[in-house]
Amino acid sequence: MGSVKADWVYLLHPRPAFVVCSSAENVYDCLAASWVTPVSREPPILMVALSPRRATYSLIKSSGKASVNVLDWSMLDVLHYLGTTSLYKNPNKMANPNIKTSISDGYVRIEGALAVLYCSLRTFLNMGDHDAVFLDVVAVDVNRGYKPKAEVASYNYILHVGGSEYTTNVNSVMVL
Ligand SMILES: Cc1cc2nc3c(=O)[nH]c(=O)nc-3n(C[C@H](O)[C@H](O)[C@H](O)COP(=O)(O)O)c2cc1C
Image 1 (spheres, helix red, strand yellow):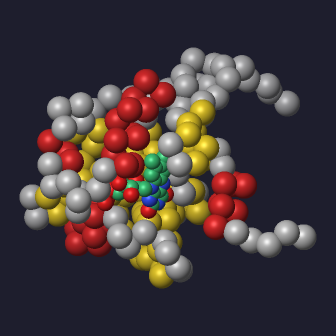
Image 2 (spheres, rainbow, N blue to C red):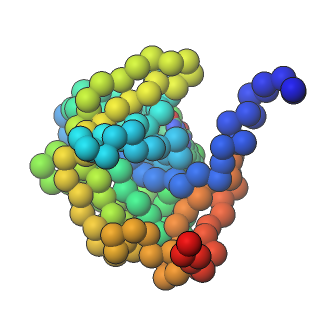
């Protein structure tokens, strides 16, 4: 058996990458997240592992609200920008004209997303360099790309290999 080095996490990639957004007190922000997983179908709960250093995470804690946006491969540049720019370092992050958002009922969403899951903060657990953040899924918008499962023959989803590397699905389906 080999020793566990910091890059052990990449053994569990490629992983689907999403955009998580939140807003509180007239500030809004979004980040890229690939450490996202459902943890309960009923009640509907998902978990996203977030570093306490993320500005978006502090907005989720303040507002108790978050959205998880599924972007098509054609919007990879949007996801990568949101995942490599922090509002803490760049206060104009969300003013980038390529980032098109809308806000309603306190939820921020990315325009053009395939699907959006609207969530409320259930609880979070301190783990280490990331927290396990549990979100109740309270509503969804499905715009395209799901029927109800991912239409992998027609759409390309964003998969994160690690760092700045991405891949996507091949457009073939095997039904067993
Ligand atoms: C593809 C990709 C996936 C990422 N996944 C996560 C993640 O699951 N959890 C996390 O805390 N940060 C993740 N990050 C890093 C954040 O998206 C990044 O630090 C972002 O700039 C934080 O922005 P903010 O401080 O404005 O919230 C990821 C970055 C990329 C590019």
